[in-house]
Amino acid sequence: MSQETLAIHGGPKTKTTPFGTGKRFGFDEAKELLEALEQNTLFYHFGKKVKKFLSDFNELYGVKYSVATTSGTASIHVALGAAGVTVGDEVITSPITDQGTLIGILYQNAIPVFADLDPNTYNMDPKSIEARITPRTKAILVVHLAGNPADMDAIMEIARKHNVKVIEDCAQSYLTKYKGRLAGTIGDYGCFSTNDFKHISTGDGGIVTVNSGDEQDYLTTHAFADKNFKRFGDTVQKELHYVAPNYRMTELQGAVGIAQLKKLPWICEQRHKFGDRISEGIAGLPGIEPHKVEAGNYGTYWFYMLRVDESKLTCSRKEFSAALAAEGIPNSAGYIASVMYMQPLFQKRQAYLGSHFPFDITGITYEEGLCPNAEAILETAIRFGVSEFYTEQDVEDIVTAIRKVANHFAKVPAL
Ligand SMILES: *Cc1c(COP(=O)(O)O)cnc(C)c1O
Image (cartoon, rainbow, N blue to C red; front, side, top):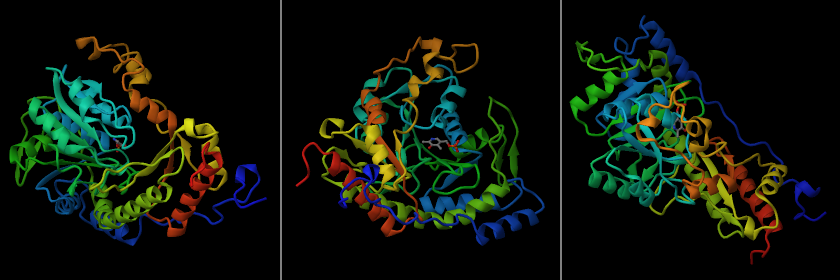
């Protein structure tokens, strides 16, 4: 068998060594946790850990105010609440995302409106956003997918023109930069998740940045995560003017977060380097569209997702995926099960069991074909993990395997 025979056809496997792994948590986290317990309180307002976690985060991000929460989902809900998103408002967002992006919209009894995506960055297309603006639009909820920044200049311009708020979902995009500026600091609020699958983990948790730097805005955001208690220095305002959930982070998450934040720059640098190297290594291959990060931007690759163009290959996406897996590169054909609006929740227009509220306020329906690029992305994507613990050899093996499979199946071989 020649070297070029695919492993799936009995040839030699590309990846013969295990992928690099490592420990995410260690002595630093343990020390912080012990200190948290020794405070004799795990309440964020009495202890020092959540406060320190946020002040470290603020310094890293160059923002004045942020609020800690229990999850990325909670962070987004808090930002929506602080932005004044309420019953019957429309929020424009992405159809390829985690449901955590949408839950807060619906809990505010607002209506998700989906904009289509750029075919290769997988982020919202500003032209599609603008086409979806109506008098009901209250906010644009931008998802920076997989560590790749969306086109923020164009999005901010649309937002200013139509006087709507911008909330950035950065759950997958730590230290991601748009033209040198950190994603999460450009819109009105930036939302982060520290669930166990993100760049850094506190088990579960989240952060919201308040980018206006305005004290009143901060107090509103803070109160929205703490049952409307406005705790600020030694004062607590307890008047209840509207509904706000309890999304308080505990000192345990704060403690782990302090230690995790110290590792974040290294984690993001590694992922940036590996992701960009994969794009460079597979550039120009027949039938392969790399994960595109626009020139001047900085991606921190929460995952890597390429697209296959079946018209240029003699195989289907499924066969490509299986051949790549046989070479020793585990991957999935596609990402989420479907674009969000094809989920039963939207097809049945059932946010709450047995009710069509808030969808029946405007009579909105969600049809297949609403966002053709997003649908096509999910039908042609091949996705695999990028880890900060990978070695340079791991990354070269990924490149070699993709090249081998693409060249084998190319209708017109690369020169
Ligand atoms: C993970 C994720 C969320 C939700 O975060 P949780 O902490 O799991 O609630 C929201 N948006 C995106 C894009 C995510 O990847």
